[in-house]
Length: 319
Image (cartoon, rainbow, N blue to C red; front, side):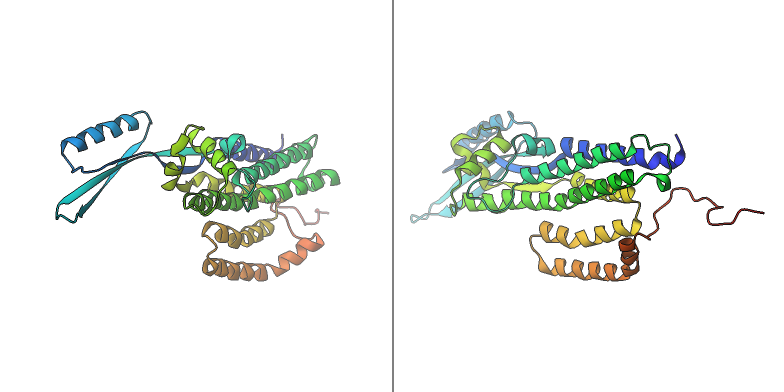
C-alpha cells in the first residue's frame, strides 16, 4: 500500500479507538452517600461511639473503595448540659462509562426539561458509527489511489464522514452539560422537594445503585456530587484530529475548534456569560483572521494538507 494512503487507515483506526474509549472508559465519577447513621448523646471515644463506628465500618467493608466521614454536633441544652450527636456517613465513588449510559442511563423523562445524557450519548455514538461506515465505504477500492485522484463519490463520502464527526464533536460538551444538569440541578430539586418525578427517581436508582437504594434513595442523593473524567476531553481532541484527517483542511478544523469553544464553555461552566463572552470574542477574531480561507473553502480552492510534498509538483518537466 502506498504511503500517501496511510491517512485513510489512520482515520478509521482513530474513529474506532474514540468509540471504544467512550464506551469503555469511565466518563463520570459520582460520589454518593450509601449509608448514614446518627448517634445521639454520643461523644467521640465513648462506648456508644465505638459501637456506632463498628456498625458503620461493617457497612463500609461491603463496598470496595468506600470511605467514612463523621461530623460532631454539640450544643448546650436548657439545663446547661452539653449534648453531642455524631453523624457517620459512608461514601462511595461510582464510575460510569458510555456503555452504562446507553444500557441504563438517565434519559429524558416526563416532567423533565432538557435532553438527558443518555440521549446525547446515543447521538454521539451514532454519529461516530455513521462516520466510520462512511470512511470504510469511501476507502473501498480506493486505497491505492492518491487523494487527488479519488472519484467524486469517494470525496463526497469523506466530506459526509467529516460532517458526522462534527456532529459528534458538538455532542461532547452537550453531554457534559446534560450530566451536570441532570445530576446536579435536577437532583437538588428532587431532594429539596421542589419537584416530584418518580420516573427520574427510578432511573437514578437503577443507574447509580442498581435499583437497591430502597427507602434510603433520597438520603443517598442528598450528598451526590459528580465529576467528568479527562477521557471525555481526550475524545474531544481526538475528534478534532478526525475532522482534520477526513477533510484535510487545517483551516476548517481550526475554525471549527475555535467556534465550538464558546459552546463548550457555556455548558461546562454553568452558563457563565463572562467566560462565554470572552470565548465569543476570540472566536470572532479567529474567524475574521481566516476570512480569506473561508472564501477559498466556499469556492473549493482552499489547499489541503499533504503528508508528502512532491518537489517537482508545479514545475515544468525538463526539455
